[in-house]
Amino acid sequence: MGWTDERVENLKRLWLDGLSASQIAKQLGGVTRNAVIGKVHRLGLSGRAAPSQPTRPVFKAPRPPRPVATAPAPRRVETPAQPAPVPTVYVEEPGSATVLTLGAHMCKWPIGDPSSDGFTFCGRRAGEGPYCIEHARVAYQPQQPKKRSGATELARSLRRYI
DNA sequence: CCCTGATTCGC
DNA sequence: GCGAATCAGG
Image 1 (spheres, rainbow, N blue to C red):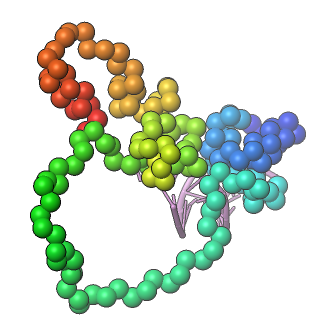
Image 2: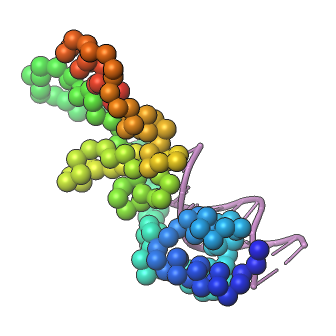
């Protein structure tokens, strides 16, 4: 499949809309993301007004030499032993995607407080639906048919979030 | 491992 | 001109 005028127009629009190369490739069909990227460059529109994910244009500072020989200071002098470091059970690890990096085919399972800075999405490869296989299981599991004791049920529901 | 764009180079 | 392979990065 070659680059017809129509397909090129599509490419331009989608690219300028901020879609990623792989997303565009899927949408156009018959091309890989490499082909899309190559074409984008040949068309001279590599830089985007609204990049899907701003690629660092700045250079990274040369790695500062690591202090090697110093012993790792166990910073923790005074803390009168708090009750228990028992972690909350039902919080997940932060996802790999933020609202800015969440792609079309990434799991959109929200993790954390949407109003806080640490809010993320799961971000793993999504299947048919908006979620990855694991979260799809949780999301689409209606109810457990049998009644259980309150404690048992609570323990059950919490387990799913570990 | 998933993803992103950038570059190279044989075709 | 094209795009797979590769590179470099999150």
